[in-house]
Amino acid sequence: MNIFVAGALWVAGAAVVGGLIAYLVRRFGWDEGRPDNNDAAGQVFTIVGGLHAVLVAFVLISLFDSVGSASQDAQTEADSLVAATWAADALPGDTKDRVHQLAVAYARTVEEQEWPRLADGGAIPATGWTQLDQMRQAVAAADVDGDWEIDRKTEASNQLWSVYQARQQRLANSGGGGVGAVVWFALILGSLITAILLPNLFGGTRLAAHVIIVSTLAGTITLLLFAIHELQNPFSGGAKVPPEAFTTALDRLA
Image (cartoon, rainbow, N blue to C red; front, side):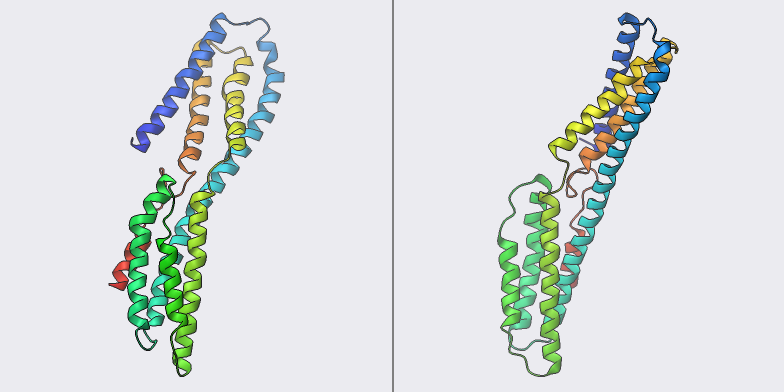
């Protein structure tokens, strides 16, 4: 389903439910003394709503940072792969062709095999690790002579180490990201208290105005929860990171 349609359904559903509850409370619920509750309810709403807003903001900012980091790590991994291949071009024997062949195979493995698994949370095949280790072994086995070849071998090794680090972080972003059950519990319960329970303790407004206020608040908070849901995995959802870095790397290595 399109993300905009899904988001609109989330918000509309929450607004309808919130408005219906507000209508039922004002129509059939206890109403005596409700205007007198405004001061006390307002103080509690300010504290609870403020705490909930801080939690939502913290989670959203953290997830936005994760998406940005995932994109940067993928770019670093692809750039380091190309740099390692270019450095290996100066190495003697069959090392140049071997590293180039493995680099192309590695980029294709990441783009075609690993990226779909990053999106759906499936098991990552070991092919990429094997290819990266074979590149490391090929560079390490190169018999170099002279300062220039030694420098190129060192540079290739350093760039492969950068590939390894960025790869580790990319896989960690996919498997260890997201929002835990405890945080989701706090987000959902806090949203119900902030958007449904406390607003229905206020009195003095007309029924139609009260329904609009509660439904708007419920829809707005649900919109934020939907954004958190979509940002949990940087490789899927509305803000998914595409494998463009490795597509570009393949073009450079062609």
